[in-house]
Length: 299
Length: 318
Image 1 (cartoon, chains in turn yellow, green):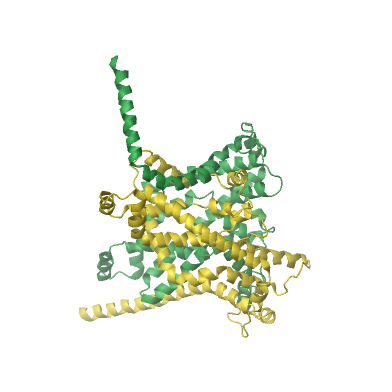
Image 2: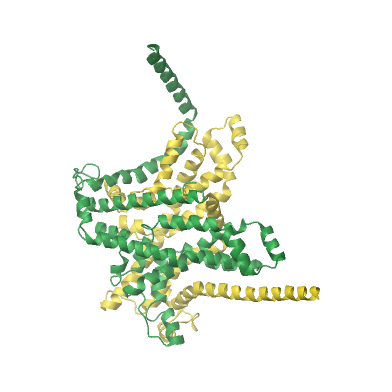
């Protein structure tokens, strides 16, 4: 009697679990759809004709896909300027970020040298207190860097959070390696380049990706410092195209060569701007997660 | 007694030579950190000291550090500007709303994802959830302008399913804050969930096994094991979010707002942007607001850090 009720109870529990599994999975899939739907819709609009977009704005895939919007988008010189500027920012900016961050992280991984604690504290303090954009803009003006890409490249040098996770990773490396290299008479930068950096590859990959995404997404500093039509990062081009067509639509000003199918052009611009992240992210996700895990254990 | 100063002098000199030796021994280390330190001095500390402009009258010819001191005059003008106070209230309303409407979602996400036992598809789901976090707010806002527009996805679904007339989500002040919260959840919740998932994975598995033997239901296990297990993480992140009450979200607000919603969208950072880069330029005035903002943010973060240490977290600075 007791055995059968127990068995029945167990079965009930398991049944309930499976139902719950179903409900939870249902919610999770709904949430995934809510995230994906807008992006797929934008992708569909970018490939659609104006007629189809007007008839069915909710579409997820166009019946007659066309690259017409992309073709017209690339006739706009701004998009090529955008790609050029953003690529310059990423290709010069990220190595600069990595050089500054890793050398500082290793140099300050031990603070027992004169001034070490003071310098480390000075770096950490910038997380609590910063000057913000106003003095930064004036500094760039006084350095005569406004209107030069250098302003954008230099304004974002070390991200203190990335510095901290790099440093704690380097501190977790066994001391013996550094000691034996020192006994062999290696200089600090030799140790840094041939011992520390190769051993830190996992965290370097993570921090590199974070910097790459940050640089790709950069727009604010460029908007404030550059103000030049031949030097606009892709993100600002997107902003201009989305805002422009909104303004043109509402004021119905016939600007020079205003594209008729603005939604299609806008969507194509969005796709073009997020394309690299879209392509790389699925393969690199684990590195990003690793970064926040290191940070989470710290925090 | 009289020998003492001589003695100190000698030890001081000894100390100095010792220090010199130590510095010499570490010279390679100093060279290694030099680029990073120089960057921090120029691009972090000069701007910080540049905020002294808050007490000066800015003159372009004399520059940031040469302009004449005028005491608290800039602050008098700041505190006389009603838009300044409005911007503080706007900031607090948006960020307090985030604590209520955005903060719980990552926890919910983490709990749900943790409950699903599906090897590979879990990874796919997680990729989808975390992806939007890596898009800039320029991209997300552009997508949202599209999706929330009069002829966009959301209005299409609303009119199709419920027969509701198209709503101008981005053009009406009353919808602005809900849109900010919803898009914030859309972009960041999946990513923020990872911290909680890391915390959940640290909970002792034996507790779950014991609970299962005792016949605890899934909800009971979540309520009595998982949630208490991540309580500290939740508390620490909540306190840090409180520490950010006066900051954050500029990218989002700037890209989602427009002239129709400016009234409810002008946060402190937006106010600083407007007075600095739009209209009449007065860097002394701007610096006074910026200094106010930085000091308040620092105080809030220090308090948050102390409280988070008190509840068992390691705090902001480790």
